[in-house]
Amino acid sequence: MITIKRLDLDDARTLIKGAADKAREIGVPMCIAVVDESGNLIAFERMDGGKTSSVVVAQDKAFTAAAARKATHEYNAANVPGNLAFGIHTEVGGRLSTVGGGLPVIVDDEVVGGIGLSSGTPQQDMDCAQCGVDYFLSNYK
Image (cartoon, rainbow, N blue to C red):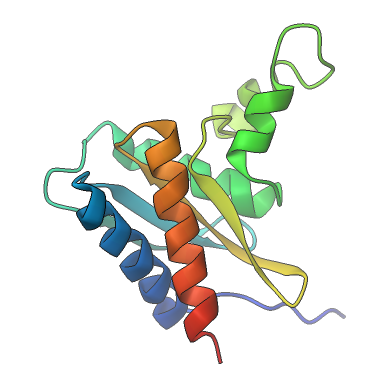
């Protein structure tokens, strides 16, 4: 039997708050998804003005970051023609995202969930996701 650390709803809300605060600061309304360590959705927020096309994208980024235990931009760097990982985005029914904006949430060297953002540029999505993680970790007990 194993014991699993997992984000709870309050943790997810904290991650969303940190990410949304940064999104408001830069003036880009985002779609923000938080998942558990298996990639299952815990909480989602589409800020007023967040792109409707970004709803699924944010969830797929969070899924990838948690379930694969890797930031989506790391897959982006590997998913180029000629690399052995090329085409990884077609796996898991197309749910693996290689677009920046998905980060695993790591506590005590263990992935406990993931956060995914979409609606800005990949760099804006990455920056807001990082702010969500940083805010969560600064408030983690």
